[in-house]
Structures are given as C-alpha cells and as structure tokens.
Length: 97
Image (cartoon, rainbow, N blue to C red; front, side):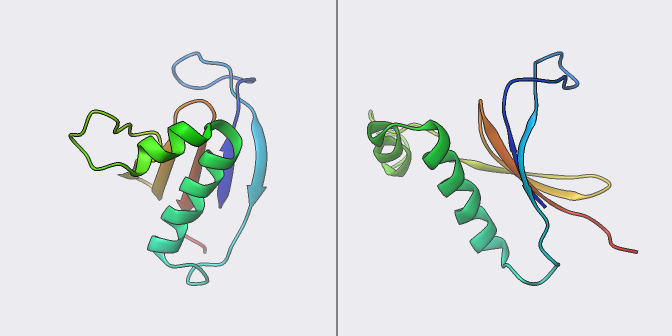
C-alpha cells in the first residue's frame, strides 16, 4: 500500500494528518528497491525544490548533503518503508489472509 500523508487529521504525536493518496499493490509486483525509488520520487515531486533534490543525492558527510530522501524501515505487525518529513509517504507490506 502506498500512502501520501499531508497535514490534516490526527496522528499519534498530535500532528495534523490526512490521507492524500493510496494505491494497493499485490505482494511481489514491486521489488523493495523499486518501492524505495517510488517513495523517493513521490517525496521529491510533492515537496522538494530542485536544490533540495540535488542535496539529497550529494555524498553523505559533505557540506551540501541533506537527508530529504532517506528511506527508513520499521517492522512490527507489518513491514513499512517511510520517506520524507511533511508531507511524507509510506509503503506498508501487510499480511494478506
């Protein structure tokens, strides 16, 4: 499931949040690397300037580097990838019964 989150609604930390887009994809149709690239592309498209995109691809530990497109992983009841700050996008692998 791909989700793009904005700033209206409520999240656990009290921030406003709303679902702007959702796309369900069957497990196995997209690789993990492709999903990571999709998340980075969506964040770049909806929230970054050209300069911020370039800074995101600069070498780490350089003066111009910024982690705007860093993808984080979390595991719990489901496996989730997240990219971006506000707005941010997530991809969740859910157990299908």
